[in-house]
Image 1: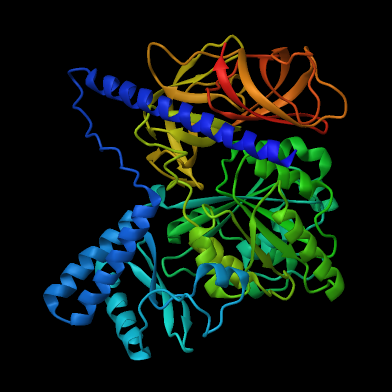
Image 2: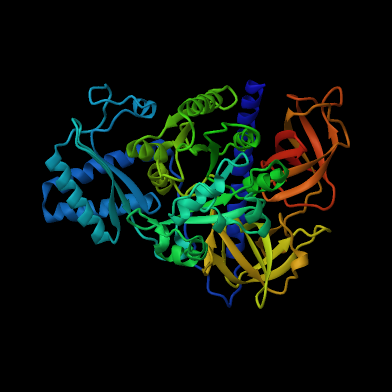
Length: 611
């Protein structure tokens, strides 16, 4: 089953990439066509050329060369060389979306570092050996140079052993809130594993008392406070300032619960100070809220999933379910083992053994990395997406042990907008709606992710499809990002838009906003997809109904046909299946991944054809 799952997953990825490239080429052409049709009265807007997406390895090699050159220039101490070095540093930082991790001195081999076996005598150290004096000189030179460019330098890690080395973080503060880089992390795990508490401690700075004090401020409903169980998709943000310190309220050390509830920094205060924002999507762990959790995972487009495991309970119940969903959506995973202060050593060892066993199993095939030092945290954060690594943090929210490594890791994660594979700005606008509110004196407000293109206040847009498959024309009246007003936004960002003259009842989750045009995208009623049944206790046949999750769309679908010889599907079967939406047509595209479930039934697939 595991091998079938893996081969199917790689096929899905292939189809997804193929369709995406096709749509990108088409989209770019459409955009060009639209821009040439600008009416006479309006001056043409300046077109920014699409950012070239370099291949990763070349970029890494270039960066390493640039680093050596910069250090050489700084070592020479002449003003002319200093100016060249300054321009090169500025170039490096902007190329890496406003932040760059600079390593000076010999670096330990990754494989050994991740396995926790690095000693001063181990083989395979890479880079140039430096003396302590050289390191000090470089550190001062780089700090002053980055200051000239307007950035900040902070020391992430320093070692004065046999191999002296240090790691610096160079960061430029964003010019305004609309450009702050953001990392989206979904937080999942079983009931009572400590998800909301961990987030409360990370974002408020105050440690927990072991009685649920830290999580009270995160809850959105009265019943959540009473039962201590999250039932909705909560959003929390943690900002890091340019020097890499977390932005926490001043009353972080108070012990009065009322003060803690009141004293949370407003989102706008955080966004103004932050050079990077980590948004946590706090999902529900309880089985009866699985639909909500799944929706948060598919519509939030997270860059990583933080799976929280209680050390006293291990990976049980829904956490396995959540892990399999994250794997099915191929989102990188971070494991965080909580409650290590109250767990006996033997139980703790069992939990760790179980987590490692599951991560190494053929279904997951991840490389577990225990993060016990800042150095490991830095190296894992900069390379964990592509190397199938799965960092494991062991934290206690009561004593605060291990939280520093977790904060450092989050501070260095690459931002979600930098992922040009998922989000391209040189495309026609596509904004998927994930939440709708009606705000007094403002009207209808929609929140969601921009999947492609750009949007600004005053743009005429079309909202749809409604139950008849039609689109409604409206105008963007106002926009906010992280509760701070912005005038424009581009692909990969999460924004809220106020729409002109649209009734709240006319909008539902899963709709899209697209640029106004004569031919809006077609609303889809029936489509064909390749699916793999992950688990079903009997057989699936025609007219079977299940809940489908596909991006921000969630609706019940019916199977109207399949190419399986017996006409029935069981666990582990693969087939091409035709689906039909039951209540209304939706906006879906070829190459989108889909999950469907009914109770426990899980199916995974990809849309191959719109009918």
